Length: 159
Image (cartoon, rainbow, N blue to C red):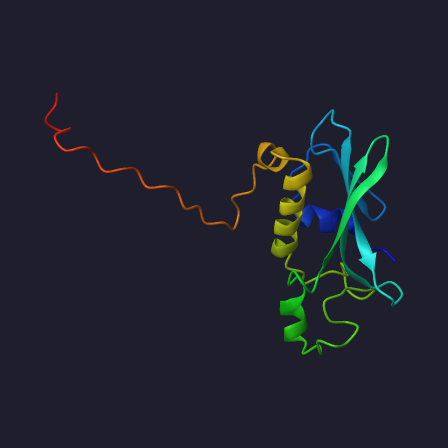
C-alpha cells in the first residue's frame, strides 16, 4: 500500500535537520555526532493495511533499540474530527485508524497531539535538540511571556 509516509512526517513538522524517510519509517539523528538515533514507524492493527498509531524508538549505534513507546491515534485525537464527521462508531475498526482508502490514506488527520507527544518523548532522550532545531515551533501556540516589573518609584525623576 502506498502510504505517502514522507508527506505524513512532513506534516508533523519534525524539526530534526539530520533525518530521512526510508520506506514508511522516519529516521533522525536529533543530536549530530551522538550515538542515539530516533526511529518513528507506523503501528499496524490486527487488520491488514490498517494503522493505529506511531511507534517511537530510541536506537543506540552500538546497542540497538534501548527504548520504545507507542502513540495511538485515538489517544492523541488524530482522527477524532474526521471520525465524528463521518459518524464512525468508536468501537469500529475504522475509528482512530487509517487504511488503504484515501489520498493520502491519513487524510483528515490532526497531528498536533502526536507532535506534542513526540516532542515530550524526544526531550527525555535528546534534551535541547527540539529547541535548537525547531524554528517553526511557535506555530499554533500562544506564548505567555513573564510581564516586565513596573518601573521603580522615582526612576523617571532620576536623570
